[in-house]
Length: 492
Image (cartoon, rainbow, N blue to C red; front, side, top):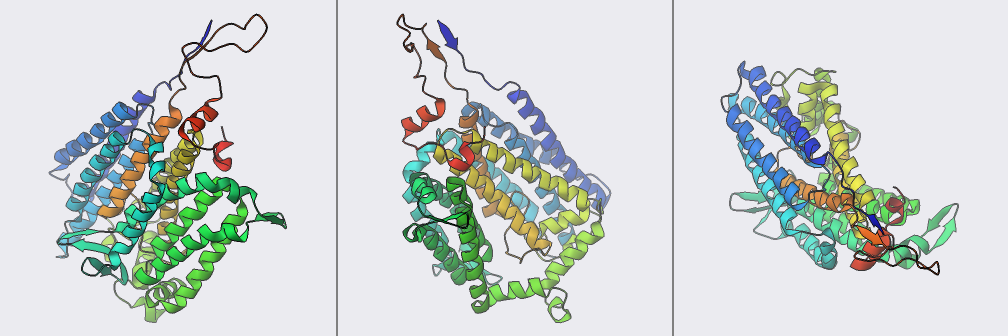
């Protein structure tokens, strides 16, 4: 009698600890170098800071080992390193703000949000034992997304900042509901598309090599397109609108592997944004700043104009290849250097080399999310992990593209790096979901014991184990999913 034993990935625990220690050292070294570069001495609280981050990080690692022992060991250290670099840069800007009598204290708030976000992310990992449970709440997630997007429009709690009505403020606390809405939207899109992907992928006529969808199948994309434009018009929020629609088109492509959906989506959004840019003054101003950044009459604008954009470009140019060094540049000259323009701040003091290293860390995180999407056995998990990983990649591209004047500025924050509690919390929750899905993707198949062939040459029976049906089919049938998605399911 043969036994098929499960195989567990070796070295994952040791690799995770080693990478986590290195990630903590990166953040701690950056914090110390800020003090040395700015004041010539190591910050007095460096030991307390290092101990606090170590407790949070190894506490998160312990929860991952407890609840998701097979999760990708690279995801958590990568995020800890990015979070640590962001904290160091915000602390560096705080020192300059305080020295010049400007509003400061951002570093302490960001550190508190880091602790809250990590704790809530680990609570999500503890409570959510199986990511497929979320599929039951597909339409609940849709309703929650609509409510979150509409909250800033509610009188009394909605708050406008720099022309965009995207904030909810209750007393001293402020929140951007759209940051949480992008997670619930990903859950809704994954649940909807895994149910309807066959119709979206196979129906329609082929024209010039592209399979065009039927008119009635365009309904979902038209609804999402209209919703994204409504956000753009009512809240003057180009960034959230772009993320919402980009997420849906990307997940639609992952589900159907049809380029025609991407072309239709890009055409719809580009046309809609062009029309809105001529009607909504705030959106039109962002396009004017992008197209005429170097014009003298525009350059002299104060906060929020292209003076911000051009100062950021000059700052990155002064950083050159290797940067001015931690604490030795002048990133504080750029308005909102700790949030919208933290990429420019990092580029000035770390140079092109340091900025590329940070983008490599982001690429590693996105790559690991996509690997989880490829490895997980159910279609819902593939779409959810692929959508969440793409969401991080798209947000970083939009931010970096805006700061470098590749595309118009959107006001989005850089994941894990920029100051902002809502963004930090939402992205740590995304990390928790990716850890949960990667744990399922990397978990070895259960042992199967098969008897010897029957005397008449029939198929052997199974004793003490599951059916010898392929793992992908068994898992999908058991949980009510269809076969894995086309675009991700073929990659092994």
